Image (cartoon, rainbow, N blue to C red; front, top):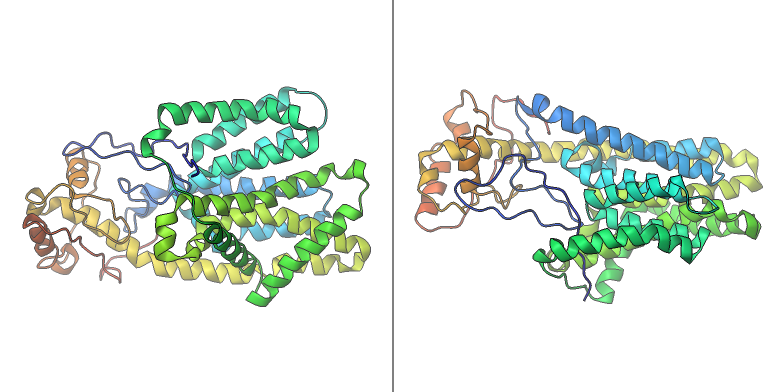
Length: 436
């Protein structure tokens, strides 16, 4: 049995539910969209409503790419190779969820804060101001999401290998203490997560890493080559350095270890979901993005080790990272085309359902959108409408307002049914949509 409680911050600014009590969102590593707050607003209000939040997560993502570049420079990677590797992460379309989805600030923010903490504490000598600032950054990472717990684990490995167990204890103990206090006071309310079997955890790790390497390469076979290159090249990098000069490799190694910790956390956090969706659950965009961030520095070190033997291979080393960018841009465009109609349906449900007369006669727990917002309830929507939190849908056609279909579904809910309204698979005719 493994305790997997997560530190998180409330994300809803709408206040308490006026018609029913809505429980706090689960603190777990999987920060799926908070059902009380539509994360995508794919109508004409999308740009003004979501743009500030998108800018926040985008700026944080760019900061993460810059911090990874710093990690690779500090590890002694050739500047051309390091910049190429950081550029791949910056345009890593397979992890687009952590780039454009405002809610994923919980993952991207934890990554940035964790990298800051790791870089600040990556030095020799006694405890100083940098270490104190690193502890503060670690606290911020913990406050973001469960990904912050993984970043603290990486921090622990990094400090332990470079500065010894005493310094690691000095830096990590305050973070562990704060986490345990949170768990004792708040976190235990959500219960205990049962760990998956060893084979299940191993399957998630294997599947997640395979998919990440596939996305960092232009095709599946080349992904296997990258994985093999990482192992051989990193061993070569260690052999090229004397024991006194191994310290710069600690952070890339610790980050790569963190990829295994992350995937093991996914397996232990979502045993029920894994039984339904299988080990491929870890192939979701938000996880692939973090795996890439934790893997690219070690891969850059490996490529640099080979180019140290033959300097003329530097352009080839750069190309190893850059050739995957077009493929990732295609993945991002494909994801946008797939999700756009679903988000359009979600927004339509949010705008129309609470304005339907039938909404006042159905159970408050009825779920009007069981695909993209399965925990969104009619009761919360009615309360949000009363507080003026839901914009008007404007002039709509009978098809858009769901006449004949949506009221019928709500009427079925009033009769005791539990079915929810399914969003359309295509955007409503005559309305411009964009993912929010």
